[in-house]
Length: 128
Image (cartoon, rainbow, N blue to C red; front, side):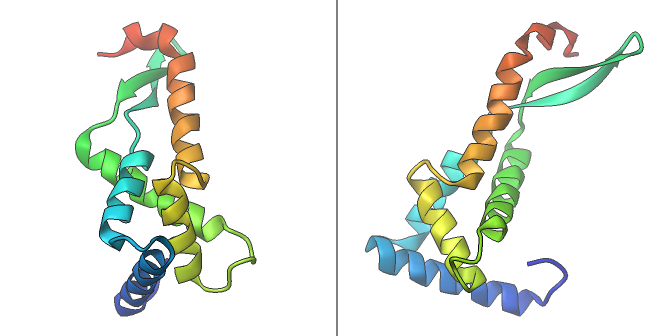
């Protein structure tokens, strides 16, 4: 949720966890942790200016940033889901279940970022 009340966002999270638990018949927190683990990136590209040119240099992602990016991508992917699901809790629950299964928009975002880092591996020597 952007620019809203914390209590409203908390209620949406708990509703999403209830929906996840009902769909999968497993503990919602375990499913959430599996989803976050599937979304966490290991490599990303960062721009470096060398001699007037900006190169996309692949770098490993640090621990706290990995978690931050994973949660951010999960939220954006849930928000980007269309009107097939009515409430935000439904959208978030669907995205969590998909991410735990290795699918969904957030996992696709991670794959795109890591693919970009892999394709720019030639510039890894600019890392310092």
